[in-house]
Image (cartoon, rainbow, N blue to C red):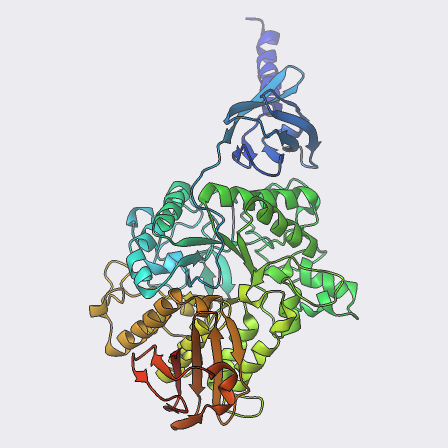
Length: 625
């Protein structure tokens, strides 16, 4: 062969391979599918693949119309605006992209909407149980770790690594939860956290065991069981008459998220000349004298250097996240959403996202985490009666104000503004909220010190707080293990308040899921919660009844829950000595009643003129004539 011809062969191959490298293709489309019959007929598809933004797109399917294509700044992305007619039928079509002689395509499915329970919401008739799946129970050891994931370590001896809990483990203990009186399960996020270990402290690396470091919005972490197991989990809950709450994070993602590594737009994330953390000062949002820079640092500052802050003002990102919330609700039959770090998100985005969910699922409930210290701040982030330029449409929220008040009431001695006055005064500000019954109340959660440790490991105080939680207004929520007296503080790390539930893992020496495995003190606590939670479940007056409270006097605090058919009196003695409570000043609510049954002891009371209240005790009395 001619030498010059031989020299040309590598050049020809090089040109060929360069051409192949430039060939456009479609590797991924989000949302991964959609449904016919949605109330919003608009859908925006994120299309990803090498040079996907260079293609001219077309769709040929009855009832589906491609309105517009938006190339992104990154040539590997395009956004397609579709409209789906109410007459469109379920089926599969192809998204076709062309560029000259190049053609790329991707199949896309329109499904029929499921008819089973979803979007039911949670209400004050529910008792929510908060679980960190990795720490509750391991039902399938085969999914503990995967070699193809960035973090493939599982080690129960290390608090900040993964321990192997999963959805099957929770399913295995649903009888236990229902015995306790639980009606809804809220788990810390179950989306995949496929990330490298993060530097939690100078001497400590942390895994994303808690779930808050998303790396893909359309995949349930396979270490928990994956998408199909999650669908089955929701179905199992609904068959039992229980509900499912999913945890959302709109504020940030992991720096291992696929859309951080390959960003569609430069402003997909909030960028700063140098790393800038959030101020965490929500006052800048409602302060009439606030500066623009204070608002910006709160909203656009990052949580940590490895949690890139999402720019929710980018319209394509906003739509991506809103559609994901709708997709998740429909795909997994969710009933409610808890929204993480609510106060750090763009306010207009939050309202838009909430409204989109409520439009598709009118009964759904949304309650965000705004960790604030005063009622005005808390009310600002929910539907409220405050005269402010911004009006939130969030139906509910986590009640941090009552949480603070509860713990203060139990730690402090009684005084003019202390002790049980704290709890009473917190409720006096309920007029700020459009509907305080939609606030979610709690004694602790996965980010706080454990309740029992906060109140000095005092079982009497424990019962007082539990009684308030389960008899006052709002939607009560519970953190796993508190019913068997799990305790600890966040020293030296958050992992200390996220320990494994005893009995949920192979080799555990104790099994607190079983009555036989509990100490007498733990049995007392478990049975107390069980009795009161189940009484609440069967007593509409404690769920949706009115609340009337009386100014605390001499260490006592009294309130009533009542409706047209039942009245319940709740009387607290916060002192270290027995008190004889004169009831004459409660005549507005006691009038016509002469007897009562002590709900907790089943004791009958035939004279309501005075009540004997033992030291550090709450009595719950069902009144009768």
